[in-house]
Length: 270
Image (tube, rainbow, N blue to C red; front, side, top):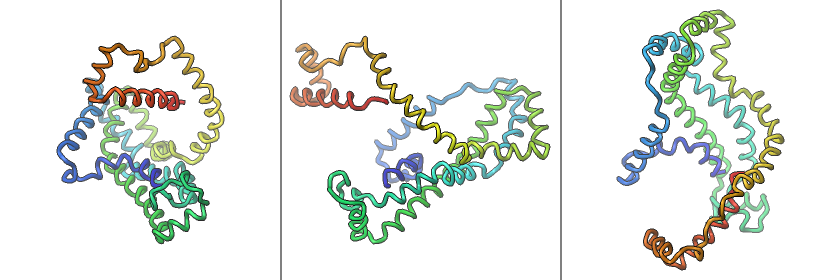
């Protein structure tokens, strides 16, 4: 349960941490990561023609993404796509690791015994779990609302690039009609419609069949590459350089490289 909550709230982690709570190294590292991300997603400035189309594009996006649209997406996401997952998380019961520090797989206990243990240590675990879920939804809504102006700006620029002035005028004319107005207001939300999510879920067996063949295809793609070198295959100079670079002893390097090989064999992408 806790891991599920953390996965959903991961985008909140940086913004939720007050600056005064970060040490100087952490703040510097966060700033560097943020700068790298901004650089990775940098785009070319609009051309003069695209700038000229931007007001038309903004009119289109204002109709497609009126104020509060991001909150509606969150509501439909939690009510549609994530709703069943939240129900499953609630039915799964408490996490033993959260209460006594041991995972269920480490102890021979039933689900009922896990709940009893949790009730002894935290009689309010069910209410706490319910509030955690509610908090994540509300917090994500706040984050999405804060992102909305930037999203609207980005979409406006994208439309100014993708469409001609004639096309944008046509879209605005269509959106001025009753049907067009309804389409514009609902188009942004419909991406998370439960029916679309259900259709995507129905494709899971096909997806799993595809993934089942991926591992063999990956092996075939790597077949002509030599295996990773073991410590014993390194020259004396290479061994010495590794120890110098890492500060590890020969024994630690031998052990670490063996673990790395085993981990690489297990942690395939598919």
